[in-house]
Amino acid sequence: DKYLRQTYSLSFSLAQLVNKRMNVSIFTNPTLQNGLLATTFHRIYYSDIQEHRVERLPYNRFKLPLGLRANYFAGKKTVLRGFYRFYADNWSITAHSFELEVPYKITPFFSVYPFYRYHIQSATRYFNPYGEHLSTQEFYTSDYDLSKFTSHKYGLGINFYPVKGIWLNKQKGGLLSMELRGGVYKRSNGLDAFYLASVFNFGKD
Image (cartoon, rainbow, N blue to C red; front, top):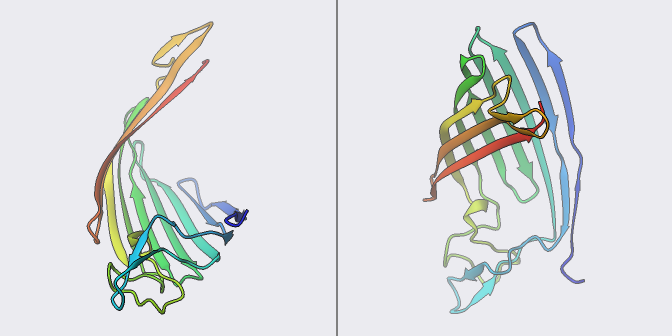
């Protein structure tokens, strides 16, 4: 009962068709959190005393993202999808994210889409690296997700969506479409990752 967490979130979006080739949308998703927001298995080490404690963060957080999407039909086979998001919260983190995805239709039912995402953020005022906190501080974290960093994510996706499905039984249905996506993620504070994802859509035609 002592460590409850409540989250209240509101979503709003507005879309506009600019012309026959382009549409844009704006969105926001303000979020308020109360309760235990620290990760209590994160240890914190200090520069002035020889002991460690667990991470401690404020019991409330307000997040405000603002975003813009734009899709542009560049020709018979190509679409440009752009995305920008600004983020700020009351822990002093601000961030900017930019993303570009370029789907290209090889056939009417088979397409590929390279993508790239760039993200930059500032650190929370409660962050210090390992061994640099003072024991007199009220709040403290060494979680690098809350630190200052830049990141790059890029990769390629493949989408296959034939009219009659990939494997389909008229009575029972089957596999309608499939999508594969792979990417590389690199962060300036040392985190590198590679991932693969797949989506299989089952149903009846």
